Amino acid sequence: MDIKQIFENNKKWIAKQLQGDPAYFDKLGAGQSPEILYIGCSDSRVTAEEVMGLQPGEVFVHRNIANMVPNTDLNSMSVINYAVGSLKVNHIVICGHYGCGGVLAAMQQSDLGILNPWLRNIRDVYRIHREELDSITDEGEKYKRLVELNVQEQCINVIKTAEVQKANSERNLKVYGWVFDIHSGELIDLKIDFEEILKDITKIYKIV
Image (cartoon, rainbow, N blue to C red):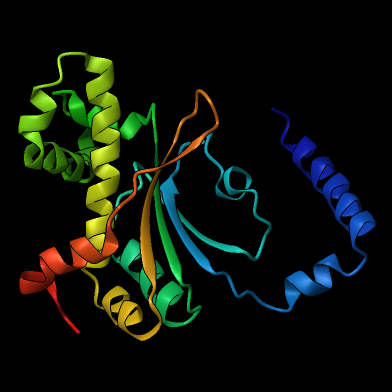
């Protein structure tokens, strides 16, 4: 790829936006008030706005390897704090995808250097759901199921946070778990039961 082409693409994009709406960049520069916080994977094949059919300014995006939300990660915790406390989002989406390289790497027994502590979080998901996963004999199906379970566990991690619990109490904020199927383009709703999870973890993790 010729990096210079990116700047040519940028000029064409600007012209296209202005043709459709001469005030496009005035509106963009006026600020943001997204309804959704999207936490997804850094995979280059999965782009949040395009997948959801949304425009710039409509979704606040955080991405990392395998769409993780560890409580020790100041990056993701800061994103949640800002999105919920300052931007006042009402929906938080954790979106994984089939064919996730991070999940696949976590399934393999190999030393991946600095990635080891990050991938350990996914291996913890496997440990929690080991009985179900070990009962799946087809490796491809096991891989897909771990992607889904990882999304589920990250939703739980989000629900554990004080900001989310407070926003749910004050304005009924909700958390959703989705998977993007890169083979079909479909978004799959895992139907995470926010209220049931909150109720289940209340004894240990209730903060507000």
